[in-house]
Structures are given as structure tokens and as C-alpha cells.
Image (cartoon, rainbow, N blue to C red; front, top):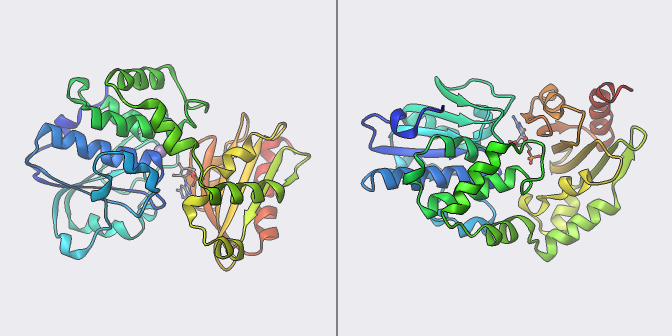
Length: 318
Ligand code: 5GP
Ligand code: MN
């Protein structure tokens, strides 16, 4: 049994919550879900959420408009929750709020967790940080607003209940949240499946330009800085491309590479059944889960693919 949020709390009145850079559904869902739950426990608490700008579609969640970056003027907090982040480096500029917190608690589900605070609750078997948070909440006190945040996070980190990280417990948690009345169909359609015209154009381009290697077991595609500039695209416009690549028949590993600075790349890795991509990402200084991981790499596109291929091939028995 997980320790309940209520048991974790002491006399803290000023609480802040932060999560990883390029916030995804689980990150935003867990931060806003915990905020909403804490305010249900005690509406007089101060609960601030510090995250980088995240996809506008998440504005369906209560409290989204209050999310901001931490600034020195925000001052000190009695307690800071760090959610869905396996290491300090993943917090980007918001890491500075840790210096202003009396106590820090990290709640996460990454298998590549590198302990960076004293109090850590890490469950790699949880499909999402939102699933773990659900276990830490008293079901009776989960409001509809809290439930929608948690449902969105679980839906996103499981690829809408398709990935191998889904367990009976994941479905039971999702079922309980549906029982609270969440707009489950709207949440997955508006925030997961819906794409802007620009997103579809970038997806199409990435698919057309993809290359297979390792005898068809790996697929890779890249979007360069030049292309990003041409389309005036942002990082969030690339969401979902790697998942589409992964669906290519016969493919075990899908790699999507986006250039963030000249010859600096954000690498997203996904696998289907065999390859532990968290090991590959960790080798290059990143991390993640068994079937979904990421890292940052440098050099030419060909250097990056060669280096990745050297780490992946042995896991494919090549
Ligand atoms: P994505 O490919 O969607 O950005 O990330 C997939 C998973 O890998 C997520 O759980 C994400 O938190 C993790 N991840 C992505 N990039 C990095 C990274 O650079 N470092 C670490 N530690 N984890 C990452
Ligand atoms: Mn997550």
C-alpha cells in the first residue's frame, strides 16, 4: 500500500509542485492533479505549479492557466513536490525552486531514477506518475477536477491504454476515475489524438523521410532545425511522431530525432517487445522506461544514428 498524501504532509502551508522540461500529459496531469487534491484537502493552502509552457490542449484541466515558471520573486516554500522527473537535470530552469524549499518530495515512475532528493517515492511498475498519485490519494476525496488530471496523465503515458505498461491496476484506476464522471472521450480525443494542420504536415514529412536499418528492425527519422524554422514549429508540434514510426510492421525500435541547436538533438526512442530502450538512452546520459526513453546527442545525423545503432544492435542479437 502506498503512503497517502495526507500522511506525507506535516504543517506545511506553502507548497509548490514542479515536473520535467517539455511537459507531457503525465507531467501536467500529475502536477495539476496533485494541486487540485491538496486544495480539496485544505482550500487555504498555497499551491503553485511551476512548469515550462505546455501544449494548449491541456487547458482542459483545472488550474492550467495558473501554471508558470518559477521566479525569485515567488520566494520560499515549505514543501516542493517534484513529479514525473527522474533526475534534477530534467527540471530545467524550474530546478531553482528546490533551493527555496524547506522539504522536497519526489514522486515518479522512471526506471532510470537517479536519487536527487531525500524523500523519494518511485514505482517503475506504475504506468504513469498519475497512476501512482491515484494510489496515494483517498478515493473519496478525489474531485472531478482531480480525476480529469489523473485520467489524462494515465491515458497519455499508456498511449491511451495500448502500451505494455498497462496493468490490471492501471485499468482499475482508470475505471475508478471514469466512475467520478471524467470526460474520458473528450480528454483523449482533444488532447491525444487531435492534431493541428502543422503537426500533420510535420508527421507526414517525418514518415516520408524515414529510413529503416538493422534489417528493417529499426526505423529512424529526423527533423532539422531548418525544417523547424521553415514551419515555425515548436517542440510540442512533434509529439506523437515516434509513436507512429513504432507502428511500422516488423519494426522493433523507432527513433525520432529533432535538432534543437546546430548538431544537438533530442532523441526519442520506442520499442515494441524486446529492446530495453531505457538502457540505450541511459548509455547516452538520458533515461526513461523499458519501451519509451529519451536522451540528448550531438554530432552529425549519421554519427547519432551510428552510435545508437551500436547500442541497439546487440540487444537485437546482431
Ligand atoms: P519522449 O521521447 O516522449 O520525450 O520521452 C520518453 C520518456 O523518456 C519519458 O518518460 C521521458 O521522461 C524520458 N526522457 C526523455 N528524454 C529524456 C532525457 O533526456 N533524460 C531522461 N532522464 N529521461 C528522458
Ligand atoms: Mn510519466
